[in-house]
Length: 322
Image 1 (cartoon, helix red, strand yellow):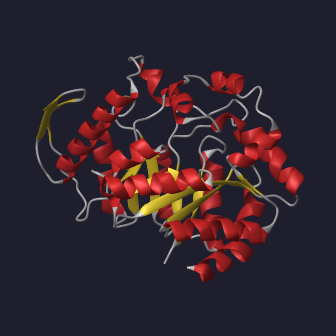
Image 2 (cartoon, rainbow, N blue to C red):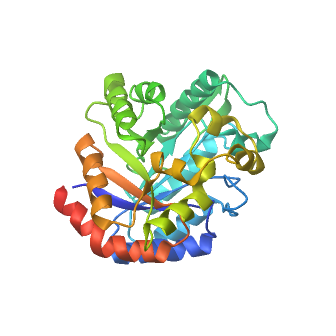
């Protein structure tokens, strides 16, 4: 059975409002939640950036849904702290929490003032973090000297069943590497051919049989013009290649980079439509590719209408396709 989840975008909404949205989404029929984890928003127009780990405890207590979060240990977060935070949530809410780990983006990580590593070195650092986190969850006393330093760390509060570690990947190259060590994959809704390449690369790299999760960027509104304009207003800073998204440091740089993006450019990167049947057809393609959890991110600000309409009309139709 495919799960259809709601994406909680901390860059766009206050944590108190997101708490209301996930409660509403649960009542509407969404059966999972994915949380972002940013220090800065992508754009000053988005204008928020609450602390995801504080919010997760409140949101999981306020609902009965499973939650995941995408974060980047290694610079802003020491992996021992992520191991402790994730273990605490997994102990309080057994088998309702998973964590996706990625190599990070400068917009969040460079607040520490440390140098921003090249992608290959960030991947090495990420794998060190994954190994450290798993060892701590296993009850080991960890000492490690590499791109990450840990000295005699032991995690005393651990869940009976540790959370899944899902690998975050945007490109086929990263997806293939992630397949060798992650418990599963999470990626974003690329154009069809590129998404297929990411899936095939993950399976080729060792991910065959492992779960795959998808974050779908969409814009739904009462009419096509509104759906397009609101997607353009909120999400035009987020459509660039991974190398650009990873290396820019400040929201105003993303705004500058998006200065020449045209509204019609958004169609290639966001599923924009006021047609319910069209959204169901898009979801069908993702199911056929093998995604077991699909998280819907309505990138415009009209969350109440999106939750209500998708809960009533899209999710029942999509679930019928499973």
